[in-house]
Every structure is written in C-alpha cells, then in structure tokens.
Length: 153
Image (cartoon, rainbow, N blue to C red):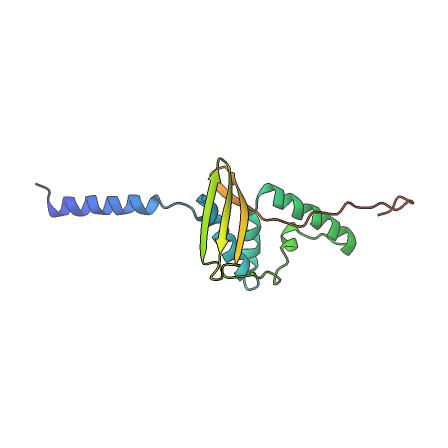
C-alpha cells in the first residue's frame, strides 16, 4: 500500500517531468512560424523582438538579408544590420491566420496558413536546422548589381 506522502512525491515528480519535457516553440514548423509572426507583430514596441524574429529565419533568408544590409550600408554610408532589413514597423499580415498545417518531408516543410475567407491562404517554407525549425519566407530576389564602366557601383 502506498502512503499518501509517497503518492504526493510520485505525483510531484510526474508533474515536474511533464514540465521539463515541454517542446520548444520552434520544435515544429508551424510553431516556428507562429513564434516568428508573434515576434514581428510586437517588434515595433520591443526592439528585442526584431532580433528574435531574425533568429527564426533560415540560412537562405538570412543570407538574402545580409546582402541587402551590405548594399544598404554602401548607399547610406553607415553600417546597416541585417535585422534592420526586416523593416521594423512595416510588417503587416495580409490576413489573420486561423489555421496552420505543416507538411514535413525530412528537413523541409511547408506550413499552409489559412484565414477565415477561402482566398486567405499562404504557404510558407521552413527548414530544420539542428533541433529547431526556421522560416524561409519568399523574399524578392536580389537584383544583379550593375557596375559602371568607370569601375564604380
């Protein structure tokens, strides 16, 4: 027979184990996308949120923003951070997500996002990097930089 004290200890250990096993928000593709959207929405009020959103991007997206920041730095004459390329304060959703469904194939996934209207739909690519999922949004391609005949940019 188990004493009430023994049962209490066992219950406490079971609850502690459950609390420790909670998956990170970016452990799934749709979780990473939800976290990214949340961070972007609060970024105008919380500057740390922009950095957190940037960290949720995949390697390709970060590379794209790194290149854009380098070009912007040349134009502005001062260093521009890749995080600044996320355009703080200009982020807006085309629709409010109602449902997210992830289709995972190995280390790649597509999160299908739908809204309340049938036309409200978007597919967002994600990649697994280690134990976490990262967002690979469709960014406009970088234009090829033209060089002037005199060697300038």
